[in-house]
Image (cartoon, rainbow, N blue to C red; front, side, top):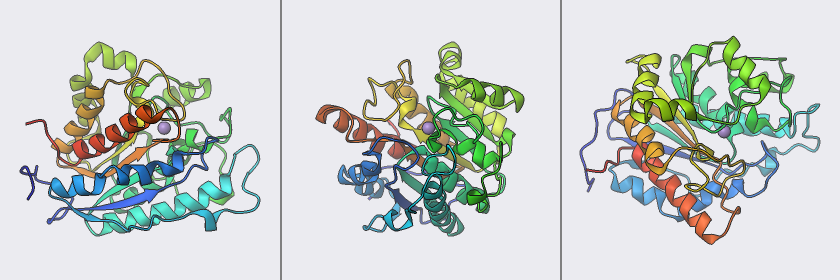
Length: 314
Ligand SMILES: [Mn+2]
């Protein structure tokens, strides 16, 4: 039996169902291991934890394997693995869209953050006015022109917004995210080109300075007010938003991040709106660090998802 009553959901149909997309994909960045994130999260009991919260979990035991989508020549110019990323994110987009079309919550377990090209285009194809809360140490808003590394996990937001020189292989991805439909929280490692883009488009971004100054409670009220009170919400949570002492097993850790409680508060507060339609949990890399780091990071991944799906302290 569910252990608690549910906040009424504005967009998710009852009985509450969550569709899980296990996106074991690491092609948007250079380090192996992040493709194992979904497997570990499931092994640590995430599915039964969500069932205990009263959700019907729609989940194919066999994770989608994206190997068959891997082209021989994957790079496009300096964009690494671009053809592969395009093929995989297009597949993820379809999966998320189908879940949203059913009126279920879409939960995508990554995998690297390039996957958000798929998850957000998927939710936005059903909820045209979806607002995105992007929790991350990085803005992931480099364009094909500004990316210093060519790693596409640093670019999904610009692709969703249609910024920079169009890449023909991504023609399936029509711009679906206006600059005023996204709020960043937790930023602290921004490339110069990204800073310019955030300014130029007046994108709402709360850095760790802002979290320190206002407190996470006020930040969430400002973020939710900015997106509007009727808006469906897509939460895209990169575990590297958390401080590396809290979530060590991730590919691009940056010190000075969110505390355990700040991370959970974001998820709890978004759930409380009753307007959440999609959640991404990204960049859990169980192969980085020792066993204790793995356990700590995977467990916090599970508890962040539970908070976003209605677990409360009391
Ligand atoms: Mn990210």
